[in-house]
Image (tube, rainbow, N blue to C red):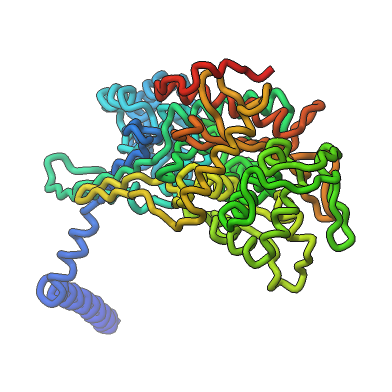
Length: 580
């Protein structure tokens, strides 16, 4: 019996010994693989495990105004995090850190401590984009498990001006609209990377090897916008919308000889310092209406129609027609805006009184082929290509369209049934102030990068009318404003040229007889224009709704301030007439 037990024990010992030997052999084999066969592989994996990388944000380039002053720029800030892993390892030390951190931010220490332990993820964001100096103070406190990472915030030294033009930068650092979006690849720069060795808990190891790829700052984009003129336009627009209870409005200021956009204001607008990306009305507020929205220009179109007829040699300023107060075209009766009948009327007088019958007469003398040829030459059928995305093209019917009728020629001549953007319209009429040469409007002056400065120069598009025609038209437009005793666009001490426009608001069933668009396009000084200005007020209410009543006085105020800003001496000291 004892012999059997001994035999049984010997067998068990053999099994155990075999298992121990097998395990030892496997361990030796594994060690051989790790140390000899896959040595390089595991060295690399270990190195990767020990390495931790932190992105270094690249300074975003500034957007500058025409004088080089920043309209949008970035400043250094800090993002503050709690390392939940560290707090979980040493909760006693972490509670002390939570108390000091809570005191720094004015928070409940117990609540912050619990949140730091219970929140999901390895890091808890306490504050994004903390003030840089305040962040340095927190960093100096060296609180356990509290980490500060460099970040940036976009700021606007001139406040909210040109909000639709400038655009906005999202939380991911990408531009969302305007210049910030369209020129994002120039402004963003390239992030840097800081790599350090970390321990098993992911904490940086002091005095360990570090490698760094420096961040490369973004380029700067300089605009043609002058912040002072932009501010003048925006103040005037705010005052006008409040005074006339209008739905919206735009003011554009161009340099007619170059096409440079000096101001492009639009309301409603966005407040760059308080953007709510979840606001359902955000798309409406950020829409850059001067380049995206089409409208019927009304009697401002008579500037172009009259220019066409004079340039074609069909009329002179003293040519006459018989104004019976209305004219019938293809069964449609077209009336003067004030229902007046003026008898024998010169081109000069028709333009002063803005008679629809006069523009119909001129369009019939021109004929559709010439008229629409000039319309295209003035650029009304295309986008102006100012340098921003979202530009709309003009819209009108012409004889090659099966839906075109002869009455379209008549109504198009005074700016109805023909749609364009405010910028395209001002660009077209500005050619009259530039000896008949159409310029391409441009908003971007320079793109400045580390290695290059790209400068955008004025671009001549085409000679639309002759210099002689342009000179004649400037004289006629000067008579429109300063050739009468009172005109809302008159500016004390300066010669002004321009034309009002009033059109009914287009709706799917025709026109809203109770809603108008009041506009004025003008130049100052008339004899050598420094600026051309378009005022457009949408749906003014309260009894005043005509271009002469609403838009012309706004022009006078804006033009007067611009003359003071440029310190341009009065061009007509005897012209002391002010709008009543």
